[in-house]
Image (tube, rainbow, N blue to C red; front, side, top):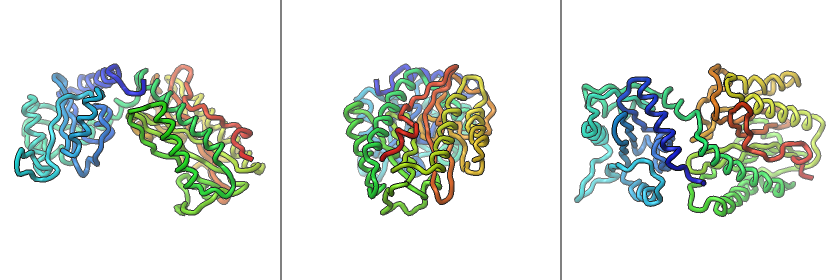
Length: 396
């Protein structure tokens, strides 16, 4: 089943209720796009800083949302498809109306304050994913209400995945493995790198239509760095016109988001036989990636994932080629919480999901990185299974 159902809704609601009980909140308020989708299962279609949104989840009572009228029909499509987890929605106007007037964006704080009053929350203690901005202005209109910054607690809601979420992540990972196979067929000397990536994104769209018809697919990245520019993890800023050359190492990134869940799948390739130095750095990066995946064990510290990869790299004498941490949480966003893998000492929890992407970057030669999406467990589960051995990753 590609869409997230009521079991996931109930799981997330249970986590929210536990947070409210633990902290003494009467309600939680979500105003950031990623949290809004996490709570409502609605694909947020606006920039929240431009068109503010809110989802209020009372400790007792039904949740409700406030949206810009631009989202009216998008919300209706979700409701008719049976995908939304919130039934109560109110809208404010994108533009002034002569009839059937709605509040304007300048009246958003008053609208939210009034809705909180009607929900019996005028004297509530409310925890928010982000307690500033327009929401703070709304709370200020309710002198007996208290708005708390609950960012850390809200982020923790997204750590542990429901079994249904992990099942969907497996399906998404299989799609990324399929795309990596297409890259094997696509890499050749002289090809424009950007043209190849666009062709791979188009292939992913076609395959997704076959596997997940009618679902929400976002192709966040089909992106390749070829040759010396790959020594910068985000490229050299001069991608237009760059072509693959014989002897180049390539690092590619395949990241789709399906129904609000993200998988990362990255591999290092060679166009032609690699040099001894390229092969050595490739194998070091692969071994570090595998060590990181193996370290995603329930009860071990989060930072153990990073430490395992770093130990491999240091033993190979390549510590100076590290430019970033080994990975980050995965889920609603590509870069999900926790984002401080290298320094986080709390125990890993069963069914958290992480990227494992240690990289090596040598100036003048290129980058070497394999990235897998891995589920924490007594025995970690690596979701992305595309080959990463030197023979498979060398395109003659």
